[in-house]
Length: 393
Ligand SMILES: Cc1cc2nc3c(=O)[nH]c(=O)nc-3n(C[C@H](O)[C@H](O)[C@H](O)COP(=O)(O)OP(=O)(O)OC[C@H]3O[C@@H](n4cnc5c(N)ncnc54)[C@H](O)[C@@H]3O)c2cc1C
Image (cartoon, rainbow, N blue to C red; front, side, top):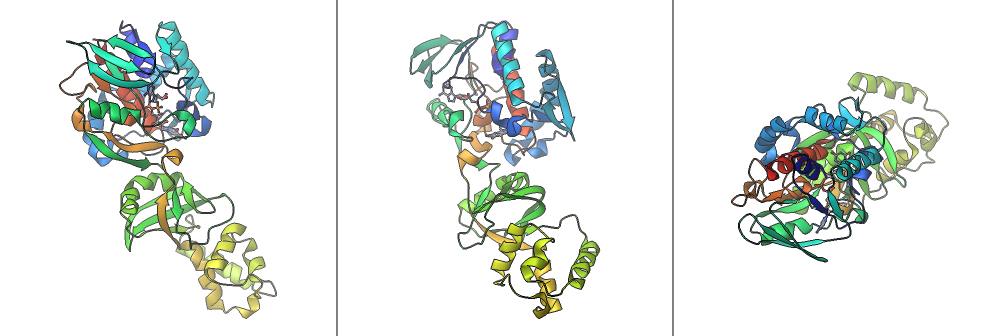
């Protein structure tokens, strides 16, 4: 949509071919329905290592301010929440509708429920696009086919990879990124979607791979939430190789050692006729308490007076380093972005497929993936605007 708008604003006659029956299905689901469009803290380090040098160049061509100006030109007022940029309306639908309105205003034709199958050269600067409904000819084609991530309704089936492969491009092996993880089946996990602020360190054996802080979610079979997703790119490869990856969760990340020691002392002073379950009741979330008791094989009905002070301290200490083994990720459908895809070696500064200046690749289908926080949409706007402009020169 962004590429189409830039091309049409430059005077090109543009047609969008969309296999879904609506435009921007995935966009309408972003940011929990609020659309985190970009981020004021924009750095190339927030993207996959192999893309960083290229991102530095691309972000200097079309960065955060350009996104904000673009949406201003569409009448979308934005707000910053600690640098995370959202539409002021708080609705991702606003972003989709504003793009649709501009598409309509510019007279861009949109062909819905039509699936691109292949593209081939039809002469000098002419391409033939074959779809399930027929053939079209164009002197430039921008491929913005997304990846494999997102719910079924987003139609993210990775069509772009085989279409580009047939055109002779290298496709880097894909895997889900910004995704949660299933824990080993013999781990005891809480029974409900517990959300809590925690610091999570991910370990390969005993080596710390990365540490993230924020609101995590514990489910019946795994862990998720933004800090876990942020770490996913770092750890996914090891999990796929079957290596031993562990998450170590600190449920009291805002307590330094002294604070926590004082908290424990206060708790232990209360040791009386209560059962262990009653003792832990006000200490932390009941599902997590249950998980700690099960893992330590402690009966909830044990009386505190029968538990030694050092054992009680050990129980409380376990909230700072709960270790769970990770088995696998939750897969593409639960992920926010696809890592891998059209190799960056295939595309030039203007997103054109090298050696063929009429075919452009942009967005998620390209081997660029960013952290949570508006970085993936920034890439979509950056690559879309650059390709849209270049294709219409
Ligand atoms: C739940 C969720 C939340 C997210 N939240 C955020 C967020 O807040 N901030 C952020 O930066 N990123 C977020 N993302 C990531 C972001 O949505 C993607 O990076 C972005 O949508 C990629 O844009 P795209 O245009 O490349 O691909 P898509 O948005 O996937 O669009 C591709 C389009 O191509 C169409 N298509 C596919 N194949 C064909 C074909 N063969 N013929 C015709 N049409 C075809 C699809 O129907 C689709 O409309 C989120 C992702 C998910 C799943």
